Length: 234
Image (cartoon, rainbow, N blue to C red; front, side, top):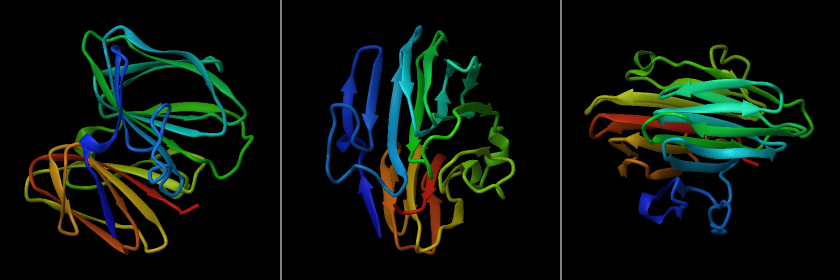
């Protein structure tokens, strides 16, 4: 089963410096049908203007994954971590017992990113932050796991949630398969291009909530960049 969530139906907030679309209920946007999908709680599609960003603010007991699509984001937190994550790369913050952080676009261009929040398997862990480069060439015509709660995904950034995040790029006409399992849930977004899943078309930045499927077959209708969250149900 697949439910398509068209980009134009997503929650929307335009703050001037930040233009955000919400795949799930967030801040002033609330839709009781779109609160979570398994452990996936938030998927925000953010455009951040140059020399602006999120000032210092707290989080706790949440796994927060940032996938930068264009530009870069500069992170600083109360643990003393500092880092700049560029397009195609990923940062992970496990908020645990509590962390204060800021995220700024220090670039001369608009930064676009997906921010994904996952519910942790347990509460009260020690907070942490990390980032990693994932070369685009390594994701050509395949789905590469970027962050995962499964220690068997050795190259992925670790998260404390029974979930994983994978990304890939497909040329028009290419198809990739992903073994999901009928007891798991998937959420798929083409960051660019257009794809087809089980006869359904998803255009750039649409969302597809998928369940009761053993294996996903994703075909590119045009050159596409794909992000997928694989989650256990709650």
